Picture (cartoon, rainbow, N blue to C red):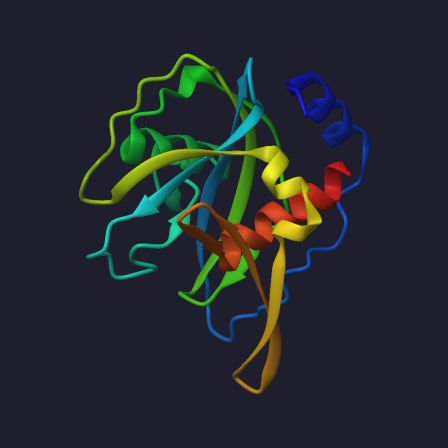
Length: 190
């Protein structure tokens, strides 16, 4: 899928209800992540992902989108996602074109996370913050579009069943809220 086809599909459809059904039972902190899409002339759109550092308190070594907790100086959640992407991987805000967002997700660590969807300029040199990020990589959007690559199990927590989504890719296991966000984005553009 190329950038123009993605943009047409993204903008023409109403967002459906999320397949992510986890609900937290205490006050939530606001956060935002950046679902960055980069157009590759050879491979179509690529999804920008990171592997979190292994020593982090929340979600160590997990695959995620750049992003994090909202700070008082952030004007809005778009500002949060852009600031965090710059801090974590050196992604310059002027190289990002925000096109929309997905509904917020409640996650187990006590955050309400809003995914910001954006097109990222293809010519990027990243500068990762080794304290937060162990690795930066791209996955073809096409991988997420193939139904055979999506897996879901039902987990039981706090007296309720929850869907836990997985997208294995090479030696990575993309799961949890990151996978749920990709599942919802894929469902939206189908």
